[in-house]
Length: 481
Image (cartoon, rainbow, N blue to C red; front, top):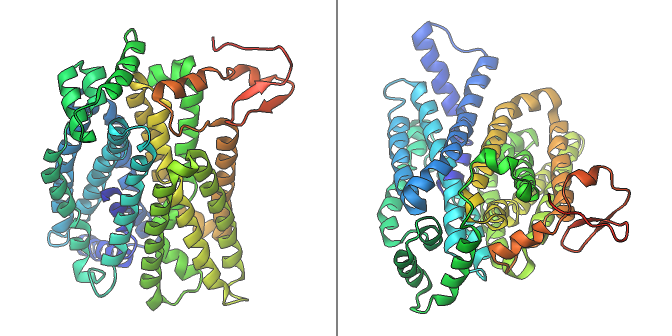
């Protein structure tokens, strides 16, 4: 929820924050900031959140190994309290630096939690509920965005005098998290496989499952433990060098990069600007934005309750395809809205379509896939890799999108459109369905695939139903070595 809130919180008070920067600059140096440097400073405020997230994602492997999943979540919440204090008093102290540092610290917290929460949920969930619980983070991301949009209304905290409080509200849910985490035990999979604590894992399973009979789940975890008995937890470098999991690693990289380069962060960061460019009256923009936030929550709920019925692949493919189509639609709307004023409402519908498509699949499935595609020894490193790529692309979009809009105008959205369609194609061709499969079974599916090298010179390729690629030459077989 905090991640979603911090994604959208800078949208509505953008003009007030820029005015504060300009006034502070005038007090310090006797002259205001020109439009270009002011845009640059504000873009840094928006995108520094992603740089903090990148730092947090790089720390995930070390933190979860040392403190566990549960312990890492509790300690990271303290960062939000610090960031909230900095941003709350930034205007009184006439220090724009405190806003930027506070944004960076909230990004650090989000970078940690955006990897650790799906990792924790993926490890505590029974396989028949893993998809449902895996998409719960996306629901709360949507709720966080929606809360930021509602609180940003002019009648609430959207006024000039309230924007520091608007940014500092994050301290309230962080405090609540610190209180509630005491009700939950550590991940039983972590306790058994990495700490070899059978008693602790058994007790944790009984609490999570609500039954004293947890032997079947323990046996499945012990099977994974035995398969990893001679394998140590790998680093990111070792993950990239491990030929046995290269398809999984490539899939995590493609989907995480595609999720950020799909343009969704540009939509969240600059929703008001997009609607303004589309010709929506300024007085109606905050309420239109809140309407899109409500659609996010509904779409996320639909995805959450249908993933176990439809599977992972259909949701993520449909989501990326819908986003690509609507991004192309936004380009047309922005080009035609001057000649056809009613196109402004089509632009709103396209933004809704992008957000709905994202929330139904790409919002949560990539994190769920990262948990499902790897066994315990590789999972932490995979989250570090996926999270790092996620945040690096997030920073890139948040920083360059205003300048991309200035130079390319409506055509800037076509770049995102192309990315969405390419990622959908990759998932359709390569990524298998993981619904109701154990972690060991998923690893065996990937182990049956051809190596990457023969793909470069295979004459003809044949696609299986789950996306495995094989040479169509009869009798040819390849090993992973």
